[in-house]
Length: 466
Image (tube, rainbow, N blue to C red; front, top):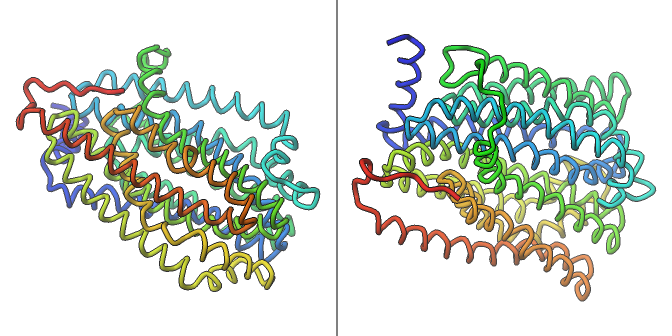
């Protein structure tokens, strides 16, 4: 047996036989660190821009968030779907289709990125205005996005294939890729924003450069023949069944980001109407903490995904459930800590971004009203990824939509009519409570389905998706 096959089999053996707690730590820790490091992109940009340019620039940056979420949605449609499918395929021993999925994912990522970048470039100002830009904040948002658009191709490839790298057995390398990108971004931000006096466009250029370097590192991994799966001839022709498998599973995490984009657009417009640019800037600060926490939870879920996917594919349900329970516990701890920070010391968080007392007061009120149920979010994030990992696309998509679309958008439209600005903030915790109830019901139902499958199904069990 070649060294390449020995290395591949060793990694897959660990997913099947190593203690679940050790595996979750091994896969989740690099993912959590990597996701938190990625979050530093947004935090660093907002801190440097807020302190160096001003509150209106923070509001302008907040307006770009829906555009960034749309980009992420289209990227994770491929990366998240391919990662989940590859995990299940490797668990079932179907390495040929795992290779073909990798090749199809590359073609899809590049094609989709070119298409949406072209649309954004043609209608940029109209899109930004629809997402809540005002006459005062549009110049900042426009300047940031003009320099960011060409880099979206590199950003999507980097983030999408980082997920595939982790899912195919390389959590540490995935973390290193994130470290490379975030470290370079944080280092370049002050150089471009302050030393070169480029303002908000400097933050955009720094992000594109950092993600380009990170993307090169990721793609070099898949060019190595000793990687578990890698680029090779004959895997790039798009196949309908593979494309559909990627899209069906990737639709859940993609919809999370797309829904976040829609919600952010509604939030920004509501805030602009009821509280002006100051309220929009407060939302930008508010979302830095919530996003930081969700990214950490997503890191835990990404670490869980290959363990759950592989063991589901192999029919090892007890290991699959164990990984899920541990991931829920870990994500819930993150959610509780974040809730405490947002509820107890919001003023300290706000002062890191601005010296404006009006903006600080508005941000504190946002945290007090909008963060009291955030401790429930960890359970939702892990459960959504769990269904994605076992190929239950319909359930995963429903949970993706529940918190941010089915419940939050109606609340966001109704509550401000009677409660004004406070109603915008209160929509968040009420949406979290409703989504948690739905999540619990689906998990209980899924557990009953597993209970009807024989205890040792490996000889006859065939993983079902969709």
